[in-house]
Length: 605
Image 1 (cartoon, helix red, strand yellow):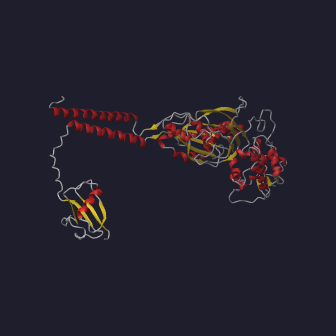
Image 2 (cartoon, rainbow, N blue to C red):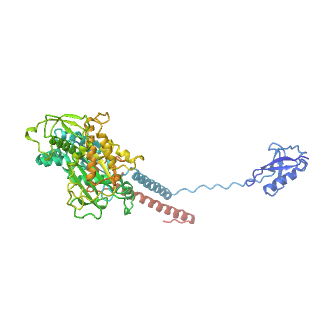
Image 3 (cartoon, rainbow, N blue to C red):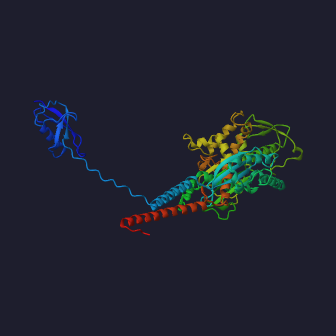
């Protein structure tokens, strides 16, 4: 006889027995045997009330009959059920809930108000309170233009100095000592003024720092330089003609070493020479009292080439003489370092250009009857109307030629131009170590960042790109000389990407920068230590005002958070909500005692 499959599905009134059982058997087996197989498979004790049926609408199957006699076929499903299910449990008597006492209601109200009030107060404080921020304004009165910067930093500061961020900048086309220069300065400050919130303007300090141009102007006419600064102060002060409300922190001429140290600070702030300052400031504000690691990264030296002067600054080696006038301790972000800083007046790009062309005119005997040969301009470069420039006493212009105009013609002779530039650098040294012109300087050690004029000249000659290119990993000063000489030897051809005024001087600029770096102690062996840089990935421009602002931030007030809820009110609300929570506990205790007393037949009070 063939094997068939009968499925027995559970329909018993038992939550612990469910599912189905597939039984393979022959058609001559009885339904009683089939029910036994189901109970055995489900591991349940068979009761007399268990039975089988096709479905709920069909009557009970006769257990004595066989599968075939019952008319069941292969694959059919039947149900195991209980003929007499147990009666449902009797309903429990409904007991009315006890009435809430007044004490429980008071406890719930006090708990809700206290807890919700505390949560809302803390959330408002954490989300809407903000760090107090201090703003500062720097006016950079340079040799050929004026720039205005707005900086901001958290008033809490990091180890005494602000972690400064540039917020706005504007510049002019004139220095303050020429006609129209002060008017343009006022416009530049007005342009950046909106970056300072109006309510903080009276608390914001403004500093004007005049650099090499004014230093040279002071050396020629000190009284006029003083008058220019006085006029600038009248414009910038709160009750002045400029209409500003800033607190004037200082309007003065910066000495060269001050400018050099400020540039050094800016370089190391942006390059991480002081460590990861934003991360450390965040840790400090989060409550960390850990000191900065002792093994901070080495600092970078700075090379700043302006229009009127060049500045060099770097951390002085431990073995350098301690009594050098150019080496002074500088404390910033909680650490004191000995920093060498020196400024060479008249060695900026603009001043060097004027000196070079003045030297060429002097070498030609101040002859305005024929073109003056100038080897530092490319062949074909000509300019009419060149006057003998102010040479700061280096060359004496004959009185008869004081108003003369000269025609200068470029010859593109790099060798002669290099000899002309070399006349600016005196290698005489009576010190233990010198840069040039008998100026003491330790040997430049470590990495250096060259910016301002250095960067713009290097960028034109693709030195910044070549230094990063894998094809020229060993670029050095000798290769730079070859690159510049090649450019100088070309005929002058105007370029749409570079102004004619700048293109005319690029041959000289390249040779002068090379000569200047050699004079400062750089050569083929340490050339790779120089990185030419104009700006970093932050919003801060690499310039001395950034470093000067870091120094001035030390004198600004130290503040913490600006509270979303005023501190006295915040404390009062905290006390109120805590008292409500305490009252909630007290009311709950009274309610419990009252309910127990009622059950025992007495009142607690």
